[in-house]
Image (spheres, rainbow, N blue to C red):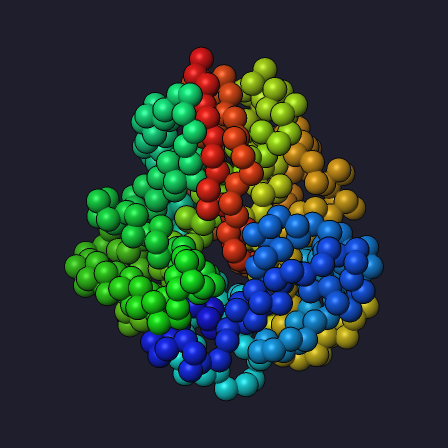
Length: 441
């Protein structure tokens, strides 16, 4: 869990602002990138993503300053790494660029973090380096191994068919909630062997992890955020207690009984559970929604797909590239070093902007365009690179492929009715509402 994942119970007015809150405030009313000096460009604010106007910021940085320094309170120095090759360099060298200080922008490295903002227990394996990262990752890897996916595909297809068959025709409805959330939450419940009637709790917990507290928002205060995460801890503690000593093939049983994880406390387990919830929910559901939006936006690609449904297989990695459901991951320098001609200091934070690397014209021609026949689409960075490459990538691809195979059998078209509402976050790049209509065959 990142430094800011567990939040305070005290009234928010008595506590320091989180980095997310600071950048959210800085983003209000920020000018377009071409109206700013290079020094003023700071891509890390939630409004740029909520308003879908982040593109110009990264275009400027890729062209003019690919490894770009910012220094803001309370986060301190951090570098925006925006070119594909530099991102792969950082991802490939965990000895120099460590995950152990967290994966999202936190408080200044080395400073005393206020107690209310400290993580409960040890961090999840995504915020660790080998060998502990490798050992814990291996504990849950079997659930998403190819041999297990063969058994999961019929269930994924059956659920997808049921959801699509229930959609109203000729009525506007929210694709995010009705389809994307429902399918991904059902899949998560299966992987966790989580009580199916409570599956929407997984969605809620996923939503609040990186939510910026604000009136009328996902959560309204840090206190509410902490209280709901503690509810998540209590729920999963019951499941761990029930499954200890009873090895099973679900993620909870694997964590409760795995050699590298069985002796962890509930608070220590929670970081891994939240990692798996966010990784299995936010990323897949936002790509499902993004696929509908992208194909509507690039209608000629939708026409091409309808004419030749066999193109679904190539469309899947291209949509994942185009959407990039997690905008960045953070690393922290363990020593003084050089990257892209810049002198990186020990303890500097580096943000690997996947959303920018996936639009790098040196790698992806016409990168802002969806091209379902793009030959190198599978080289995208959306799943990361190196030791932290997303272990659930095959599950995500499978769910997206099955969804579109079933869509193409049923519908003439899915038509977006208006611009979507987007997530107020610079980390999770997603959708909160997408109004659509379907036309059945």
